[in-house]
Image 1 (cartoon, rainbow, N blue to C red):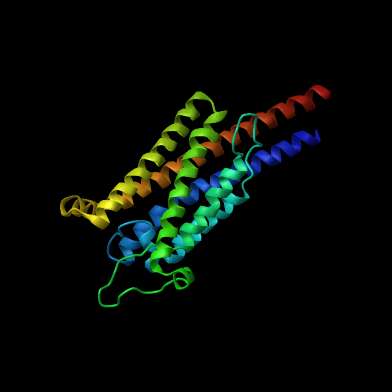
Image 2 (tube, helix red, strand yellow):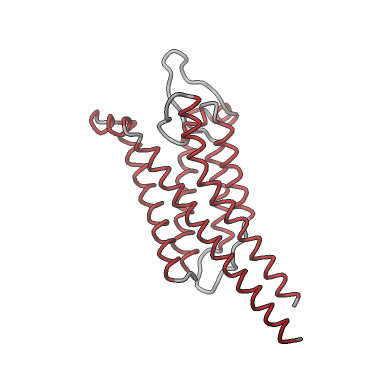
Length: 244
């Protein structure tokens, strides 16, 4: 009886954490894009560029919350044959999320103002090193999320949910590769592809696709937890009825 109650509490905790992660990821692009359109009069080239706007608090706060939830999330124990536990992978992703939040990218360069220091990490490391740390953190963050979807979530899922996790994982991987390629064209040209990347905000929308894929996977996993919780409660109720 006590074990059933503990299992229910564990499943409920997993459900809440996964739902929170999914909702945070789902809302981040919406808040930034809509908030930027209303307050800044336009859309920034990437999600990370909102760090350099009045919407910085939303960006940093949401990424920090995601990082904290990922670090605190224990997941399942490592099974035989698995190289990495759930806890290890989510902790890596959580630390990387903090890196994304606190290592700013270079932002837009203003020829008149020159390079500006807007964060402690920039003051300590310099703008270029902080930007490199930001991009490295973002890459690790996205790759870890893709691994979670493709390996961890899909491991024990039913066929329908397994397909959802795999689609989300491959979407994150494809978007990550696309962001890297688009960023190279954005920074180094040539002029034609560079103009296309900038005009259509390709980096931003690829990032949105990756974040939303992450959100869908965690929300789906949360629903799976809720289903397990309902089944556990039903079995517990049947057990109590048979005892009577």
